[in-house]
Length: 505
Image (tube, rainbow, N blue to C red; front, side):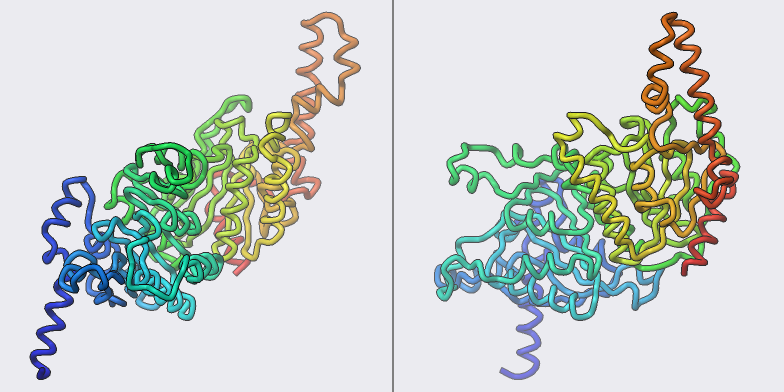
């Protein structure tokens, strides 16, 4: 065979892996309202930047199927891997370098076979060596029992894929995207990622229907296992998107927070910030409106919104700089940090710290959630872990106290101590204390309150004592005693935070 013939053969073999060569599989995929793996690949990566690894692989099933059959029905052995750039036009070609792995559900239901794993292992090794972020699409049914060519394994459990993927935690950012069914090994990869995106048409579980039935646990439809409603509520999914197009756009945006600063940005009128908090301290407000006003326009992307709602976590930009954000939501449990919120916040702080993202904390909390029901949720373990995460931060944290800052919960929101942030400031509405004011009055003045038998006079006494404690704990008093660094005009928040972070650099 001469060079021209060899080139022709190569082109034919490569073309056989493309969507155009598999119209039936593509049509079946689109009939379900989904995109193909290569359509997601093209949408994710910068045009013309993708270099594929292992494109000619086929399933290890030559002993039971013809090579033509395998090349037509198992192209790339069900997973597309390679290197590309993403967002290079914004952040430059060096910062845009990424590794990519996209499962192809049209190939044996996205199951994980022998060569499939070798391809994953190879791209993960390259990503580790070159310190490249990774985006992985995880749709698939887990391990594949049909690779009959492999005769030197019994269980096949000595593969390095899962440990290699998990071992990249804290080394490079890892984003997982899922659409459709994601079970067993695929779910293990999804769950091990740093940031987990799923479409509304996702079902994610550590076992699929066959494994569950095989374990004697009954028969279930795939759509009964780990639906989005469940997995977003329990924290498995960080971001829910309408479809693969939105999920891919969000993956690109998420990656951008780890790629650098944007030179051009806009922001809302900062004079509007003060009016977003009600005049009456007893009333709640929408903290996301505060965040969106404070951040660069369109830069706020919230993570884990359905889980641990008393603390908002997400990413923003401030004057083009990417930041991690934690913020109290007083509309959930009055802003009291429960076990789920503490767990969510601790994980997020560690993620930001590992990848060099400074943190902005907007605090308005009466403290940690207390009581027997809270303890049943392992409050001591999760809340204490939030202190550990704060103490281990290797990035600057700026704390801004919007309103309430009470007890251990407020300290945890400030990285474990008011002395920990590079800058700790309050709005004039800030109020401070060792515990919530109402509780402090009831506990500290119990005898006086119980001694007053007239209900109206007791209520008046309570109000007087409460007002006295409030005056003593006002932000201006805290600043006078140097418990915080400053009291600032809300309209100046962006400027103060940006200057503090610039100094920390």
